[in-house]
Amino acid sequence: MEQQIIVRVAHSGDVHYSIVITDEMASSAKARGTGIAKRSPEYVAKKIEEGKAVIAHTADGTWVGFCYIEAWQHGQFVANSGLIVSPEFRKSGIAKKIKQTIFQLSREKYPNAKLFGLTTGLAVMKINSELGYEPVTYSELTDDEEFWAGCKSCVNYEILMSKDRKNCMCTAMLLEPKSEHPPEVTASEFKTNSKLYERFMKIKQSKLLNWLTKK
Image 1 (cartoon, rainbow, N blue to C red):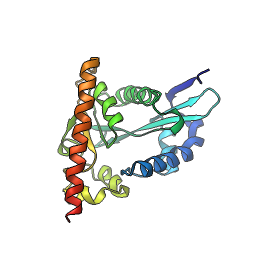
Image 2 (cartoon, rainbow, N blue to C red):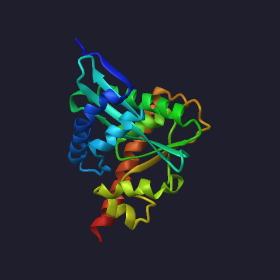
Image 3 (cartoon, rainbow, N blue to C red):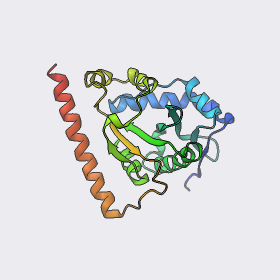
């Protein structure tokens, strides 16, 4: 019998999940060998208490997944950050449900904001694409120094700075506030987009890594 998984907006009673969430964020980044801006349990707890996070858990309280909201430039730019799913629940579609829920929460809290994200994960790019996000250059993202300072703990920070913050291993994606309803994506379009994203990521990472090894 499949376990019932609850996906909802987090509240103060969920603060106790903070440590397991940040531990899994770190473990996942290490396993992938890619960068991620580190977050402390205190930071995650604050997002939970502010009602700016979505959490997933089983009926008996076992943690399943998490994502939170960050706002920049007085709410002009909003990112859905830190998407993480417990290893035993991956490839179950739960990441998509979390992203959809945090997307709606972001729209409610910041209806006029530009939603954006930086990610190296193909699965996240696929989900973002379904929601209406499109790949963009880094210049279209927030110029808030605090946002970019969050990349300092990433293993790819040297690449980012050497490129004057114009490129890195992550792919930038953006959704304009005027896009009230995400475009419907057919099965064939989704399959084509997935292949294009995968090819794009391989080419981009290959070029950046070749550049780094030649330094």
